[in-house]
Image (cartoon, rainbow, N blue to C red):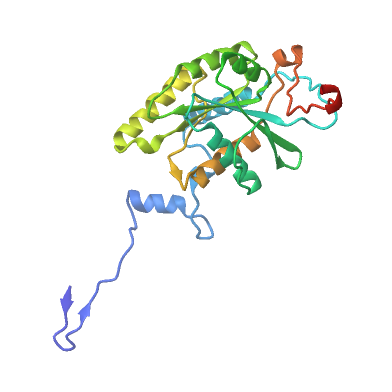
Amino acid sequence: MAIDSGTKEQSHKEHRSRQSGAKADKKKRDTSQNGKKQNPKAFAFSSTVKAKRLQSRSVEKEQRRLHVPTIDRSYGEQPPYVVLVHGPPKVGKSLLIKSLVKHYTKHNLPEVRGPITIVSGKQRRVQFVECPNDINGMIDAAKFADLALLLIDGSYGFEMETFEFLNILQVHGFPKVMGVLTHLDKFKDVKKLKKTKQHLKHRFWTEIYDGAKLFYLSGLIHGKYVKREIHNLARFISVMKFHPLSWRTAHPYVLVDRFEDVTPPEKVR
């Protein structure tokens, strides 16, 4: 820094870029003929080991995606996919169905009575069924469910009903299963909540398979689950692919929506 005594102004030495050395060599390599820089890593692998590893991983992913083609014996209009909501008492089954119906139809459902069918896409209908808590109801429900939503009380943990139902599902062809953790607003300590989530997730994976989807419903707002969480869950249900189960093709079934007594009253009298 030099100060001229005549003008009293500060003069700056102009920047001189490196002409030689590692930094200058790197700049020369990176600069193309027209003066624009290129990212060499964007166009080629710098490591052959990494390239082989990525290639083998992509092949593994492709193989995992492929499956044995199954014959789809359905004809005519596609029946609705049955989403079964199962869980112990007071875990929030009815509230979850009400929230999902509200998400799809924008209507409030006063109470859940029997199966509820909604249109989720142009060619897709979804039917929500609440699973009864007795063993016979569980066996019947396991026979027709395309997707089972297992509701788990996060503040209590897994209950006997969940394990019983999982065993019944395995016997009846094992449809797709997703876990939903509720009552997480009862945790006041964030660390304890995080630890419980992790513990329950790994226990859930032990029962089904590593990486099975587990949703978290953090709490209630005005007596309903959080809109964003219900939106995410509904999106998963809407885009899920259901492959026909071999057990189910060998064991036909009928799911009754409702029944009406058409006996003439005179005969009854």
